[in-house]
Image 1 (cartoon, helix red, strand yellow):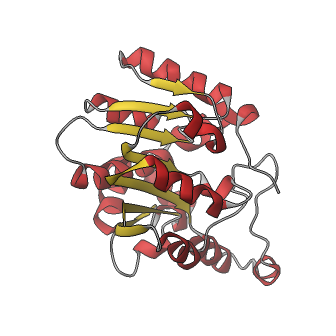
Image 2: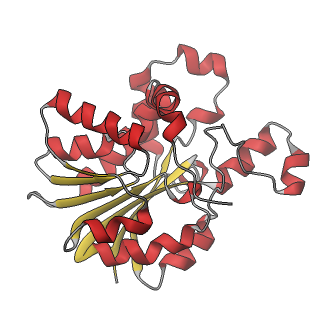
Length: 249
């Protein structure tokens, strides 16, 4: 297994993820979580695996100094276009996570790593890099594809053969991540260097709704309820993604 990038899938990614409710819910939860904790001053922000730049653009619009690192040129070009259309500036780096440290100087007040770990051959290998890049009093915003939610969805659909074989990886041309993360294993890997301050589920119920219910539910109502239940002690762990806000130890 090797790291997966999105050169050939940039357009499909944009349409599939950010063209509907899934992307809107993801952004709403991530932005709400960050708005609660970030200090009210300009921050140095590094977005690793920035994709099309949706989160970075939002942060730039809040007055923060943003650097985007993304290995796939079509994705980075899409981010540049978004920033230009919004009249915002940023630093753009085309590089995989392994090379980011050689392209930047100093540490950052906020390091973002959203929907990256599940596409890596060795997800744990990036964690020391994230720690070195974050300021001693900084934040790590870590969002990852939740293995628990994938198991639960397969249980609901009766895909017992897949569960018995533990076959969770998506197909090569699929947008299903190749390596969902076990939250307990990830927490153990983080523990020596990071303290998890808050956890939220992203799409804690949307993906489990029957398609006809999804179709007739107002997007604003979906987002309202996802935000309301994102930290519920029972439902948060069912989020298709989990968002952890961490501080260096």
